[in-house]
Length: 208
Image (cartoon, rainbow, N blue to C red; front, top):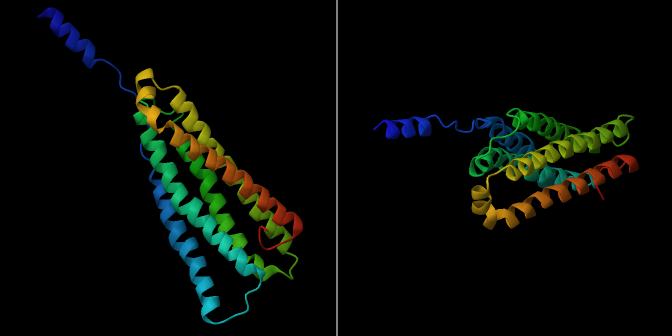
C-alpha cells in the first residue's frame, strides 16, 4: 500500500508543461483587417468599375494590395494564431518564450495596417512630393512583415526540434506538409519585400 501510494504521489507530482495561452489578437486582427482593409479596398475597386472611372495604373496596385492583405492579414494571421497554439501542444513542448506570439503580432499588425493605408493612397499622390516617402513606407511595412514571419518560422522550428522522440514520430506524417508551408512563407515574404523595395526605388504605384 505504501509503495502504491508513493507511486501515485510521484505520478501526480509530475510537472506538466506550461503552455502559452491562445492569443486572440491574431484572430481579432485577421477579422478587422478583412473587414476594413480587405472588404474596403474591394468595395473601392467595385466603385471605380461601377462608375466607369478611368482605370489608371493604381488600379492594378489595388488588386495587388487587396490580395496581399487578404492572404497575409486574413488567412495568414489565422494560420499563425492557430499553429502557435496547437503545434507546441502536439509536440508536448511549450514555447521557449511565452511572449513570442505577442512579439510576432506586434510586427505583423503594424506592417499590414501601414501597407493597407499607404499603398491605398499612392495613386492619389502621383503628382505630389509625398509619393516617394509614402512608397518607402510601403517598403518598410514589407520589412516589418518579413521580420514577423521570420520570427514565427524560427519559433515553430525551434519548438518542434525540442519535441520528444514520441512526439516527433507522431508528427512525422505531417512534417513534409509543414515544411512546404514554412518554405512557402519564406519564399513569399522574400519576393514580396523585394518587389516592395523595387516599387519604392522606381517610384511606381505597383510591384511590377
